[in-house]
Length: 375
Length: 240
Image 1 (cartoon, rainbow over the protein chains, first blue to last red):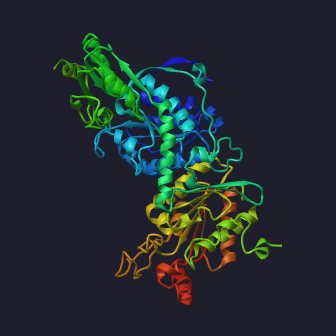
Image 2: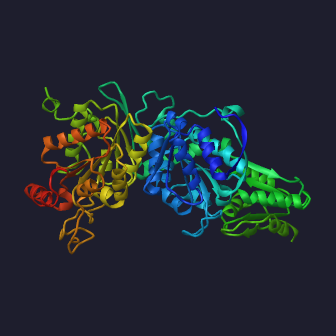
Image 3: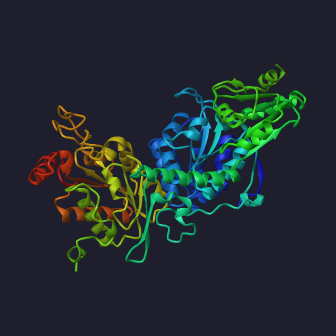
């Protein structure tokens, strides 16, 4: 067991350590900047004595499409499995993520956003929000966390595994390249030290001691179960359906499960004086800049609403926060990705348009946010 | 008594999903039947994780009483690789067509072979994309007229077992054909044994007929002439 200690490490190492602390056993991935140190960490861990004892799996795939489906395979075996990717790799993984969404497979991915569109820079953006949330040909039944600090990389790096296996949805930690490469102090701890109980896993294939009925964790039209002459139950799964009615049933079952879980999953943070007239909405590392701006302004003129889960989005909570705000500013390192969620949530609830501060693929400084508030 | 003599079906076949839903005269059920007998012979029914691709192979998703996962087009191989790595005690089989194996999923096949993944890959080669309506595949022979090559297919085609052998000298590599059932069954059994022995990658291509897209539905003689004389000439049936 890990004993709590503070370490001076980069974000990617914090994530690797989080996965290990969470009891993840398998990593499948493909090298891509700015996430590669997560793979390096796991590769080293897997060939250490402790890693061998724990049967850790490290597999560098031929590409991110392969890595995504290997990840699905790891989950089918009932193993806490994860990957790490960014940008163009994140695009390729949508093939597997959409299958995971359709079948509610609890794949976990650490996505550290890089510049875009296309190959762009290896550095930073917040432009993978749409991709993480709505990247498939489905309706976005995924859970997406946006951590803002190095410590949160570790905390949410553990949490995503529990949320994925409890609710059985693809679950993503959506960080960014700044956080991935930033170095700082992180408190490393074992989940049990904090009273965090890890959600048990269960195989989909060759699971002979099932405790959660499959119909509870998968859309029913995708399952065929029967007991054969040998007395053994066999489970067959499909994602190719024959009729529109079956497809509707699949979507409605996933939606019902997602909507029910959303109430428990939604997370947000507020910062600053509740009476402050200006409400800043920001997520991830930009929300940290907003906090610094609020402090610099004396803490009275502006406040922050920060969605921690981008999906499910804290709609009701944002509506409450927006009440009484004279101005609402959305700041993000993307063009209208977070803001679209904000406008959707607040449509009909506010009388003035949301003010937009969009800086695609570049960081936002506290001084920029302070200047916006002072305008 | 041999199981094949006692019953027309392997024990691991799911009887209540029969008659099968492949087209009349399709070769897939013959490949699956041989695979079922191989699984029965080795007593593997409760240990197999069976992955099927998109394309005609998807229709096998409930063919057997085996734990089965249907994946995306070309992606069955990495799915079963990921599974096998996480559960080495399971017997992983990836069942794909020639489009899934040799076009969209080719890099998965080659790299799984290079890494000597301990799984069995079965590629059913009928020289055409069948489920989507008869388009050109990497296996379509020169001059064959198909929907996306109405003037005749390109000059070259893929000889996959040769490529697999090139990148992996110890893999089990073979090509078989639906019309030699006992040979096919033996081949699949040997390939499964290769995995059970922990020897790594096993690859079996099976030449198979598609009367619908070959436009020989009412001409069985032509179907099997094309399979056994033309296809088997371009793609030699043998162990590599």
